Length: 154
Image 1: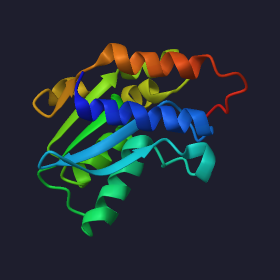
Image 2: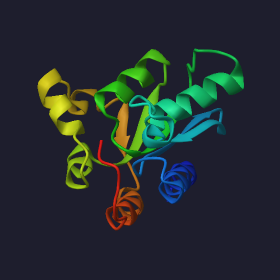
Image 3: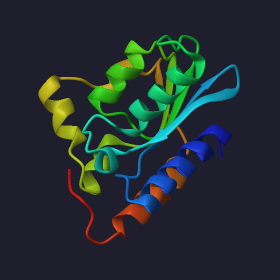
Image 4: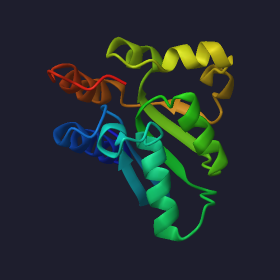
């Protein structure tokens, strides 16, 4: 398994354990060094924009004191929603590696797929910038989330 995806999964698991939000963790890597990490904190922060990728981007920008993450990559447990995909683009992240798919997000109670359909966006058109890796390990995190009773739906 990719070592950076391991860090993203660890972030997702921390978020699940703390009840912060869904099973979404991410790390931003530049020059083979993790410069930012984060997980979904929508519930914890009462912030619908605090997805794992956005949290990791915010952390990376703070850590390097710049809003420009050119030359970096992001590893995330799930294919980014449209908001997170655009955040990656605005941050100048050069490549996105993800585990589970948008369709799998839908299977565990999230609604990302409808946004793609309504916005006519598709990561299929961006194969040179986005790659699925370590699906099985990321799906294990999703399965842990499925087992949680009384989840906050969002």
